[in-house]
Length: 300
Ligand code: NAP
Image 1: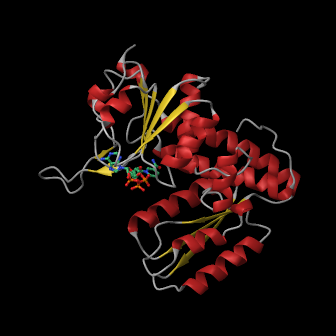
Image 2: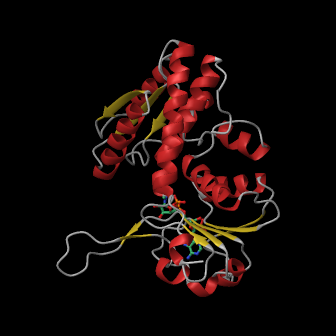
Image 3: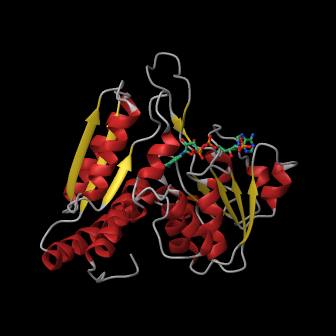
């Protein structure tokens, strides 16, 4: 196989997913008499978060859903934020609530996330959503791991019996990723900063998911020939001389690993574009459940 054929194009897949979402969002609006709605809450002026929130709002509207943006000043207190979450929980036009993380240090992030109604938890981070995923019950699943699983299933089909190694055990990525792969009957190993002989552990994997936050850590000689590699990491390198901005790289040494792997997601253009597309998918699924409308395509 040529290296070009090994590239898993997340941008293209996300475009296709958004097109399917748009069709289903129009169907929902007709049946429910209102658009599906996604509320995004941003506290403070972090520039990266502002870019994410603007992009989410734009894509929500482009898919035919209603976007509700709530921008609060950096010194917002806990009670004010909780009151807004309560208001959004009670609002019949809002199907999904996303609180842009991280929150400013003085706020209790866990308490805010826990306040979100599990029926509107499009980030899949509340204890109820996490519990549902662990129990194999229907619920809302964190966007980045679900997007990664979609790419894996699209490339490999049935994952049953494959050895999967997930590097990273965060609540946002590593743990839900491992649960999803277990749900597909993979044999799952979760590696982390205390794992011994990480390279040997990774070498046993048919599927490697790297969610670490360390630039180009996973090397070519860690990879079993033909394995499928999903690189969740987004790291900005220091700028090269004469440049103002450094290059974006993943947690995988892409240039080396692509020669050994059977398939690999690039950074950028792999998992990244899937995250917002799956957020919209989650909002749409939540809207159908909240309004009691049947999804016209349950494979979404
Ligand atoms: P995180 O909360 O910082 O977790 C990182 C995990 O990596 C931890 O479990 C940590 O282990 C483990 N780790 C750290 N150093 C290690 C090492 N040397 N060997 C093995 N494991 C090690 O990060 P995250 O939120 O999961 O995000 C991971 C990466 O994905 C980041 O680059 C982030 O920017 C990116 N990301 C991308 C998207 C997207 O849309 N594509 C979305 C979310 C995150 P311990 O638990 O032992 O500390």
